[in-house]
Length: 211
Image 1 (cartoon, rainbow, N blue to C red):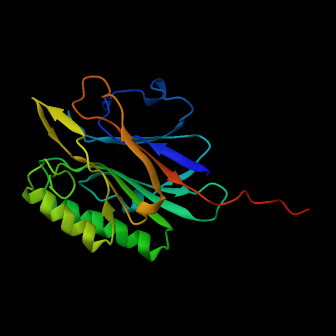
Image 2 (cartoon, helix red, strand yellow; image 1 turned 60 degrees about the vertical axis):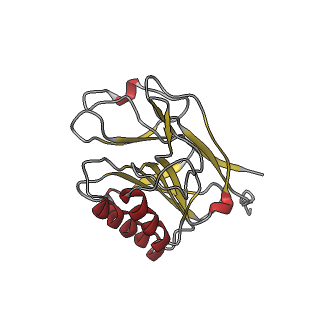
C-alpha cells in the first residue's frame, strides 16, 4: 500500500534569530515557520521536497500559533488541509477552539478530501488518555472536535515530566481510517515531549500518461 508522508509534530528548538536553512532534516526542504517572538513558543513544519504544498497564511488566525498547509495527495487531484498548532497556556481556550472550527469550516467549504490537525494542544481529557484527569481546556477542545465531526486518535502519553505522564500532543482528523502506524520515538534534545509519528495511506494508482 502506498504511503503518503510521515509528519512529526512536537516542540522545536528554533528561535527567531535562527537561520532556518542551516537546520536540515533529510530531504525536507519545504520549510514553513511561525514565530511567537518570545521564548517557548512558535511552530514549524518541514515537508519533503517531493510534496506539492501551499501555505494558507490567509486562514491562519492572528494571535494563534498555527500553520495551515494545502498538501496535494501524490498521484491524485485530491488535497489535504494540514494544520500544525501550539495551544499555549496564555491564550483563552475558547478563542483557540473557535480558530480550529473556523479552519475546519474552510476545509469543508473548499472540498478538502481530508483534514489533519496536529500539535501540542495543552489540554487533558480522559477520553484521549485514561490516566489523565479531564480539565477545562480538554473538555472545551473535545467539544470543538465533535463540532468539527473529527476524532482525536492519540491515546498514549506524549509528555513526561517529574514522573508524571500526560497526553498533550494530539492528532485530529475527519478520516481516521487513513491513519496508520501511529507511534512515538525518543524525545528531541531536552524536550519532555515525545514526537508523534504516523502515516497517511494513499490508495490512488499512478496516473498513466496518454500519448
